[in-house]
Image (cartoon, rainbow, N blue to C red; front, side, top):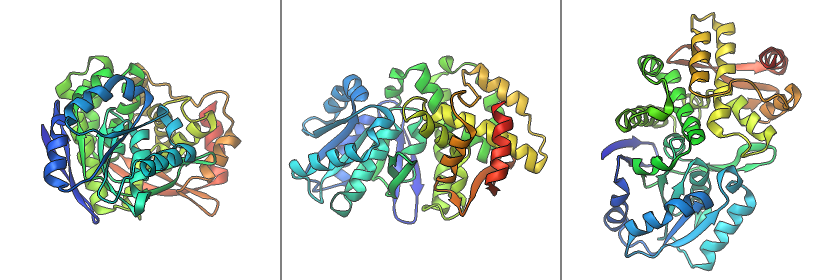
Length: 358
């Protein structure tokens, strides 16, 4: 098990990465959160059915309260959030209680927002079960969705720790593996040219990745995000580069209906679009054809779903948190590892989207 330190202005904590790291959760509670009262696990139906008994065995003799949300983005509604808060109140959770976020990125967002707002904030621990959550479980962004935009109701709230047990990843479907690996590719593109080249040369089939290779990719991704969050916890500037591919990606998710496409698959389309924009703005020598061929070989679809309209996507992007007075702050790349924030007008985005959808 490896310990990766995350330093932010509000809190320092560790990501414990490796097979069997779940064994350390109960000792951590006893040692680092002395005097905690109750434990509440927030998970979803899929993770609950497959992995909950495993986690409960690791936590024995603790008897946590269990709240099971719908799977995927369906858990990030105000109604589910309200139900989770109600469950905490019914079971008399107090300010010394601890919430365990057990699942993928959506569950982590929901559970973190519950923890951030219950009694003005109680402790929570992230226990990711997906590759995608290597990104979302680190950095303290927690939120639920609104029909008009993704993650519009939320907070910055850091966990006490992240326990990333690689054994949980063995249950993932090929679709979930693709979704999660998109965020690893994103981290390489925005911060590490050498890592990106390694991915291109060595990752030919996501289903045949060795555990050691995956662990190394996750570690690199977590460290990249950790360095960025350490400099800009509340996204006042630099942290925005982590949204590379997300502006169009979030619009696609919202327009299709949350859960109809995985987050990572939508972000991959968004990254292809952002790379195309980057080449137009900066005349880079980035090999977009090579990127597209590689991504498609890994199983990604890089076209905007045919049923979505340019105007619908544009409206969603203009409602994005990164939009300001009719312009959208897009993350583009001057080169691999050199992200920049570029304000784009509605007219330019419309023109570029029309071309991208053809």
